[in-house]
Image (cartoon, rainbow, N blue to C red; front, side, top):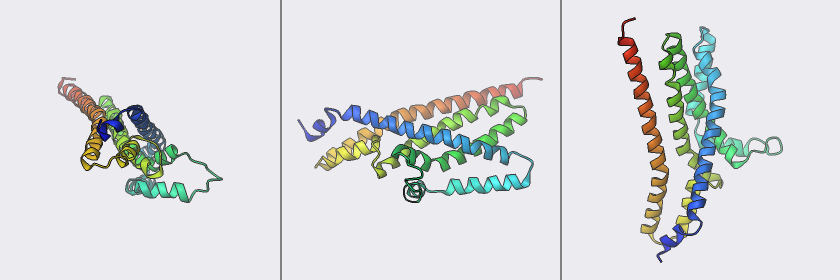
Length: 210
């Protein structure tokens, strides 16, 4: 049996699938906290107060520009462990909150504007937009490998270190890409279908006589 087949045998698949669940857990936590932070900013940007609009826009811009690894470094090294003891999963999730919160704020503003114009169906586009953000955060959650969290990418990296053949490592990486890529691409395809369906419904309503 080849070294690659030996690596793929045994507990590789259960361990890898367990790691993928960690990726999804990280993304879920990041999105929930991002919604909690982002929606008040969306309300502020959609308000009539110039100060609130400018303040929210500044905060959103800073969050959008915050690198994940910088935020992760801050959480790991600046916040005292005896004050707040964060798990590895929560650390990675919080490091992705600036992106998810900025995305939620941008999508929330658009949804509020659609709602106020009377386009309630258009406002529902907020849901597929946030689902898209969730899948993007799933892909970004591989940053957890940098701090030793056992997620899908770290499982692949550990197994690849046990292979001496470059070809075997490339095949292993390709398997990992496929196992992540197929469900994510199916998710993106579903989002596009929902967006097209909602857009088609909006077009029909606008074309129908009042």
